[in-house]
Length: 398
Image 1 (cartoon, rainbow, N blue to C red):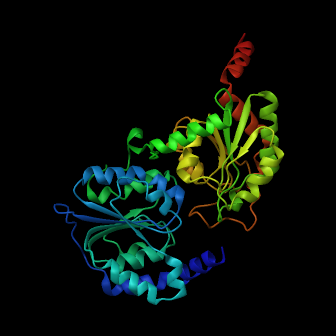
Image 2 (cartoon, one colour):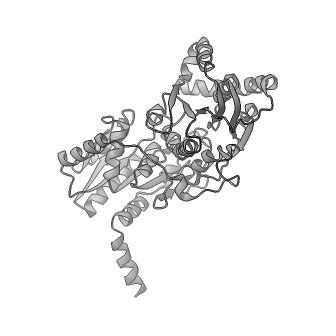
Image 3 (tube, rainbow, N blue to C red):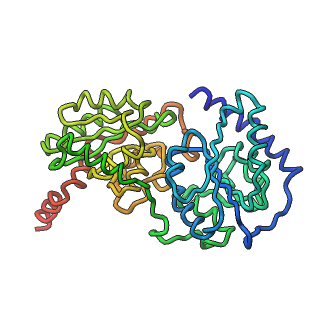
């Protein structure tokens, strides 16, 4: 956590003037070599959720330039997702924290990067100036990136796309392809064109089926709870006691219900006490399985309850209905990209406040506490047993 704060400090207060200064001497008018694109560099250093939301953009890029080699520059944060995307031909892992330890590491990184010439560089970062510095020093013909208010990272690019606060991030990412002439200039897309994917293999589904048999889940009502939001997402976490409250009430209403608790090893501080409180009808998988194995489990579940975090988009990818809880985050921008998704937004007057993924409107957000257990319980019950509520409506109408 501390090194991330240091990185953001350097990126903002040293990165902005450095990018502006270098751009004065290096920026020139370039022409898009649309007739001969052989190498494309795509840059996005975080996060898992954004990596998933980029899948439609990468799919469109690969289908439009099937003979081009797409290199994706990621980081340790999102490499686990990027490695699974078949539209990516090559991966470069950019370990940005190594640059803070020793600036010579950045020089070595750029020296290696410049061995390849890229016709097009696409920077999908919304705020990181390190992406802009990398773009400047890359051997390239043309570069595309976002203009994000107050970030000053766009000055190095030949084509600039306004990063919208009112669009879903899936659509913002797709807009980066407008200069290539392969998506509408209007930025309006068919819903089907923006569908997410998750690339499970037969062994992942076999693991899932074996898990179902081992825990005797064949005739159970299986749902998932994911209480964590990663190392940077604590303000987005819903109250643990409310998860417990909802879990107990759901089981009281349906004794056949089993809750699979998912999470990373870091998130065990939430998952373990949640399991302890619901141990008679829950299974704690936190920290035990890979992302693909967890996705396979979620795929067979009837529903996922979580805040705005990577697993929300994984669940959308595999077709599992989601109940997404939003406090500081805007569901219009980061919500589950699925028409059947259930979205619950905090009623606090200042919600949502988060724009770029880390700049919260207050130091200790309390907006998640405004989402009540009653509200979440009712939405889940309606999703699991819609016929009960249809009967109530029919009685009221009569």
